[in-house]
Amino acid sequence: MTAYDYVIVGGGTAGCVLAARLTEDENVTVAVIEGGPSDVGDEKILNLRNWINLLETEYDYDYPTVEQPRGNSHIRHSRAKVLGGCSSHNTLICFKPLPQDLDDWGHGWTWDAVGPYYDKVQLNIIPVVEKDRNPIAKDFVAAAQKAVDVPEIDNFNATPFEDGVGFFSIAYHPEKNNQRSSASTAYLHPILDSRKNLTLLLDTWASRIEFDGNRAIGVHTDKGYVEAGKEVLLCAGAIDTPRLMMLSGIGDAEHLSKIGIEVKHDLPGVGENLLDHPESVIVWETTKPLPENSVMDSDAGLFIRRDESDPRPDLMFHFYQIPFTTNTERLGYPKVEHGVCMTPNIPRPHSKGKLWLKSSDPTEKPALDFGYFTDPDGYDEQTLVDGFKIARQIAEQEPLKSWLKREIAPGPDVTSDEALSEYGRRAAHTVYHPAGTCAIGSVVDGDLKVIGLEGLRVVDASVFPTMPTVNPMVTVLMIGERAADLIRETW
Ligand SMILES: Cc1cc2nc3c(=O)[nH]c(=O)nc-3n(C[C@H](O)[C@H](O)[C@H](O)COP(=O)(O)OP(=O)(O)OC[C@H]3O[C@@H](n4cnc5c(N)ncnc54)[C@H](O)[C@@H]3O)c2cc1C
Image (tube, rainbow, N blue to C red; front, side, top):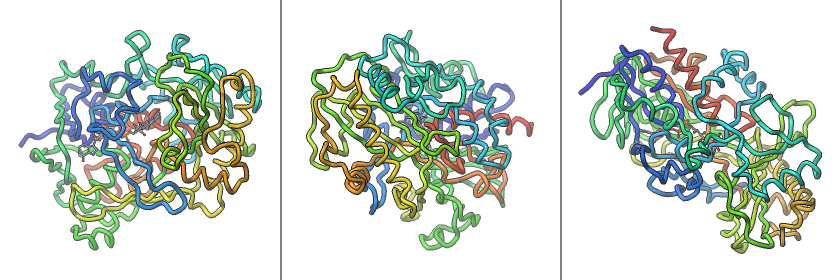
């Protein structure tokens, strides 16, 4: 058995940041327990455009959902099993959170306190460079400006925006064959050989946290026990962090007792508040094959603000220069050889769900109920309906219009709000942003310490009390950076 000052569970997006920052002090020892393999030299991971081919492979924990009576029960939730976590597997679209997104959080997590951490993030975040700007994506940007009267945005991270269209900022290296700039490549690769105080325990699965009274003192894994002299830091992500906590007896006492887990600490918020960005899809066949150039086939997007009482946008679209037809093909719509799609999503959904354990078996995947489209005010489904209507306005506008041969799904005959909602919910997908299941204020305090216990913090997307309007990875990186400072304050 070996002891370290800090034991990090999960070498993912936040875990890599913490590991790198804490080991800047050579007197501090850190072990990272990571369920997946290294990404070093693995072209399948490092080649950003290959992201779509990683779904449902050995790099993906691939979580199903429970039946979604008002949504799509077939969604597979991809979660990466590799060093760098989802930042090694995702599309690396990078957004600084909007100020109000953080001001909503409380407990010391305000824009003023957290915003400055953006400047510390080490990923190579840049607006898509000219060589990667596909002509049809450019024409989408031009058409959207005209159709819905929004400004073109050159850099979404320059200042907070209310609405707009443009190419995304993406963490990548155009000079290195468009390689991914992930939490692993940016924070760990440069120090892997030199930091003797950093130990990576790869292909190792954490199954239970050990306690001495109320203090976390180590972690049991499939390869043995790892002792933590100072703290255990949970960075296993919004599904696996609450799962590990519950397997360790931390969670709703009634639920844990029912499945035969000895209750260590009654904390009903664990696994509650399961958030996501749901989306749907509208697909067109194009008149001809498209030019090839791109960073990762979804390089541009649009934000719309319908509610003028809030400065933030409330409807977002990704524009794909490939037909993303996983869900439409299942519904019987044709597969097309050349096509594009727009995926309207709900930046601040009103529906939310929860996750729980089906049994005390640590190998059994938890039950995920996102509660998609269950909000009683119908806000979420109306957002998709509005999205389809706006998408069609854009498709009718030159210069995009002449690329498009026909609408494939849902098809031009589907026009009523009811029919668009029905289609939109059945073809719904996830933007792959689960969060919120160990929220600040209910499971952790403002220092990210698990409420009522010692020596245990959560540092990952689980701690979001509410969903940021924008894609969340940069927010997770900023949480990692701030957590490192909160921990260093105790030295
Ligand atoms: C396909 C896809 C595309 C996405 N695209 C974007 C995007 O373009 N922009 C954006 O902002 N966001 C995107 N996201 C979301 C974003 O990547 C995540 O919100 C963020 O990376 C989550 O970070 P995390 O640190 O919470 O968890 P993760 O990065 O998932 O890290 C968790 C780590 O813990 C490890 N782990 C889990 N359980 C255990 C255990 N018991 N023992 C040992 N190790 C364990 C995992 O292997 C993993 O490495 C995408 C996600 C996916 C899946």
